[in-house]
Amino acid sequence: MTTPTLHLASESADLQRSIMRELLTLAVDPKIISLAGGLPASSLMPLAEVRLCLDEVLETEGARALQYSPPYEPLRQWIVEWMARRGVTCTLDEVSITSGAQQGLAILSRLLLDRGDPAVIEAVTFTGVQQVTAGRGAQVRTIPTDLTTGADMEALEEALSREPRPRLIILIPDFHNPLGVSLTAEKRRRAAGLAMAYGVPLIEDDPYSALRFEGEAVTPIKAYDEAGLVFYVGSFSKLIAPALRLGWIVAPAALADRITVLRESLDLESSGLIQRAVHRFVSQGMLEPHLEQLNRANRQRRDALLAELEAHFGEDAHWTRPEGGLFVWMTLAPDVDTWDRFRPALDRRVAYIPGAAFAVVGGARNALRLNFSNVGPERMGEAVGRLAQALRAG
Image (cartoon, rainbow, N blue to C red; front, side):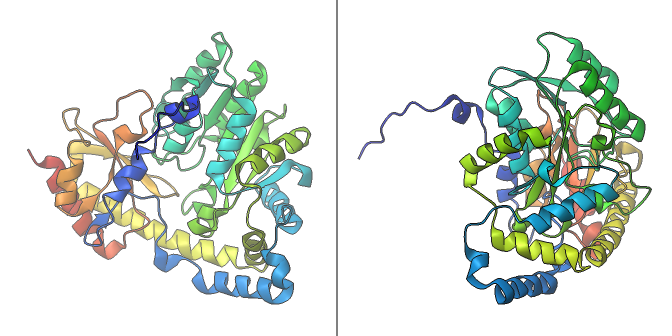
């Protein structure tokens, strides 16, 4: 039987599978030490607590927990309270539940951005941000990111001042994926001010802020929003466990119905069972000790990675020193192509993500993203030793 020739929609033609996901499929050999994925260590996941919460939901609510159901209001109310503790005042009507932060980005992109519209994103950024902008046919304007202070606000203002006026900005403020850097408080205030001055919506993609293990917490961009133009996206996938696939949007209540319709067109609703279990987890005092344990372990892993990088590379490279999150961004000499060195690294049974996978319009070929959260300190020396051999191989 021959395959028919089909006319495919423009979005399916523009949208490319994340190169990062393709690379990760090459690193699944258990003999490979992976510094590639954005994964918490499985041993640090709250398995017993999640199991208890699921059991409680099924025991108390029975089959109702397995039915179609509207967004679980107690969970939405908890999010309102969580955001208030972060310095963001919002109401129940402003909170929408999503199946992870990536779906939140996809919904808001469809809400705010048409094909061909300009959008402003960082020149090196998470592949999911690229997918909901360039992947949907947007004309992206990229801005650089300072590896100490975050996205360049002068460049952002210049991008906003050009006609046609952009329809969307997306920034990752805390423990940036892939760069590890966080936006300073002054830059957050200015980002909200620029969105207001130019009348351009800004999506604050914030899955990592609760993963802070050093330094003082910084108020979200949304806290400085005086015009209702900052849309906040959060995630339980990083707070608790990735497989939960649960997140949220904070957006103006006037847009709630439109967000709901867009969401229903994708997958109707998030699992009522998971929403109820997550609410039990966060409302019964399980989140705080889990985050304390996770962040304590991640700090040890980050410290181990930084010490090994210093021992094996010294002045031959430089790297970011994140105060939380999951990632370190490493930059080597201009003549080192980390894309070319990826397969030799796999041959040495170590994996990373080449920097070019995150570069929107090219570049970053002498850089790489390293994940520290999924490798124990006892194996970090071996991992970085293999990495050094691969990157220095002729």
